[in-house]
Length: 310
Image (cartoon, rainbow, N blue to C red; front, side, top):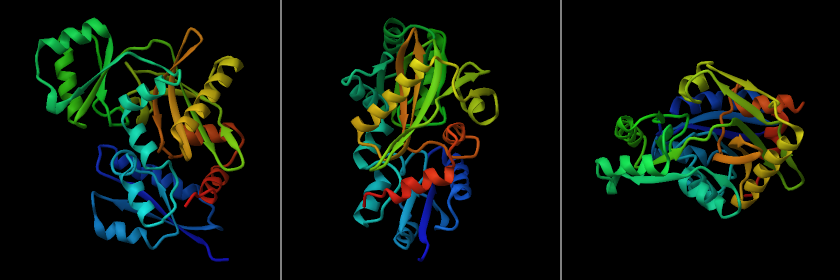
């Protein structure tokens, strides 16, 4: 039987371009070489030559963190070309990429979230009114971050009125929408899951203990964090977190692997965000959790590829 040709689609047009390439290298190393003939395809913008190249493959494993692979644009193209792919569809991708919209949508299903304020660049006027609103509604410290960015690019932990406007300007460099969000003080954990037609798999959850002010880029990628898998939480809480992530998976209509980030406060679970194209380097959360579950990344990726819906 001929090997299935897999395009590992990476790169993209956001600040996470290089992070995406590291994830692609991880996926390439994990894939079953006996079953798949894989190649990393780096995508920049609406590169028609590269998009056309994707039609030569049997399957696309999307590992772009940011646009166009995490927001539904690439998924739309692949669906029009009838090329099966690894992650959720156009609607779920677009929704989860917009952190504010996704969290408030999930709130209607009983998911607890932090208080937040959404700012749009085309309707934003710099001035004291927004500073007053942030202080009144959210208090300090709070977080100001891009609504569509990842890897904590453009994210600031704000501790005073004087820092609000500079933080907003920084976040706007990553996109046209910014979230001002209340600080949740508790235990930060992250939970990875996936489903196929035959099973639901929830990995052991990871506890995130940063050595910095928050889980920023330096903490994520330069080792200034302790990532403890399995997390040091009671079994009952672990089960609740895993069940919550599987519930979110179904509500959003996800496909492939997702990861949901939470803060645990006094026995309650608060959602930070849902990630539908999580990092996949050897040291990323998902591979850590897969190892802790006693599973092999090769087998997990095979599950996802063979469960193709197109």
